[in-house]
Image 1 (cartoon, one colour):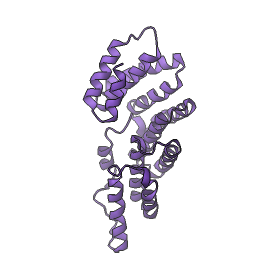
Image 2 (spheres, rainbow, N blue to C red):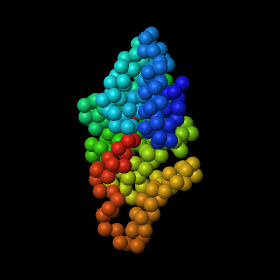
Image 3 (spheres, helix red, strand yellow):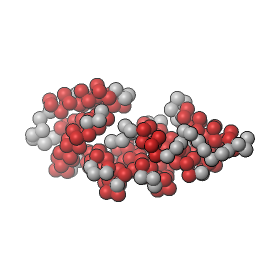
Image 4 (cartoon, rainbow, N blue to C red):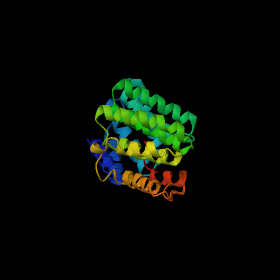
Length: 237
């Protein structure tokens, strides 16, 4: 089935190819009668469309598939589809309404036993707080997400790696530098070396500044939300 390679292509960041495969899959699978196969193909297509900037398509497909998933009582699919709907409707994850949908997605994913979808919802909750300037509110979601990833053996997967970096960025921005260094050292043995490079750059730079007593309070790499939005422009859904 073409939506399976589409999902694999999304995981390796081959986004146009993923969108092509997911489009073909959705065209091949009849929407009627309603079926779990169609719902998952639609969920994959919504994610692929979001990643290539086809937001209107992503939202339309996600809304339709969410209605079908509710009819079929597919708890895991409902959780999966609530995430793009939360991110794309209105002000998205930056709004209280969007984050309420993401909390619902997190609970549904937990009920369904789908740790990857739960982690995705937690990452988007954290990003919604970060993009809204609610940095202190961001940290509990990141802590929960990383703890959940640790307990399910998923620390080296995509969303936990992004949560790990976002946690360090937020701790650094808030001036919690000792906590930042401790967080950088945690779980280092299970984090891929290349993925952890930016973590060590952040914390090594900070620790050197502190130990040499030349800390000025300014770090060109972390100047407000615009940098974060650029870095994570596709880190959603």
